[in-house]
Length: 140
Image 1: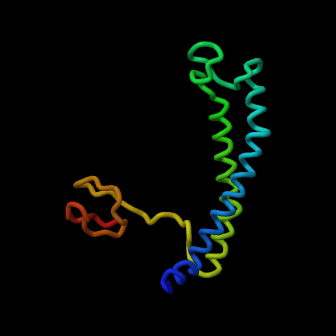
Image 2: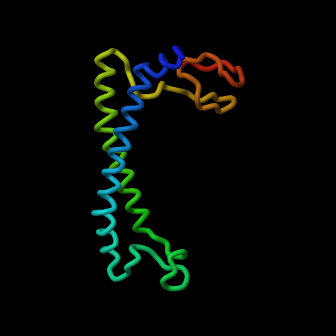
Image 3: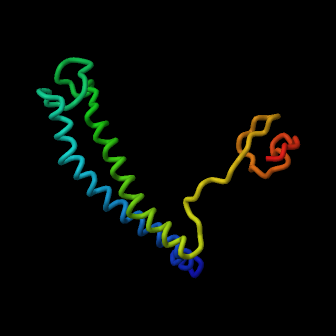
């Protein structure tokens, strides 16, 4: 039990748990925004069709054959808003706190090069041999 308790009380686990709780709260808020505000606007853009913005593929009134583009547009708007909130409310402050501690998070990936022999594109830029085919690499 002591090992399990130590695992749960690690700082990283608590940060992830708090981040998930905040994300769920924002998800509910943004879902209400898209359902109450965005969906009616998208449906109004269609005009007279009460089913929303989309195309009827089968018999009129059959919801199973209605391609609902409005729901997709709303989902895209929801995703963009949700990811922006997560980035500005969680990621940016986390990067700032980590930078104060001297830790770089969410940085640019390390530079890589492509092996001319086997065309592996994930070799570190400073590699002198290909890790896949073993050929010598030219200096970068």
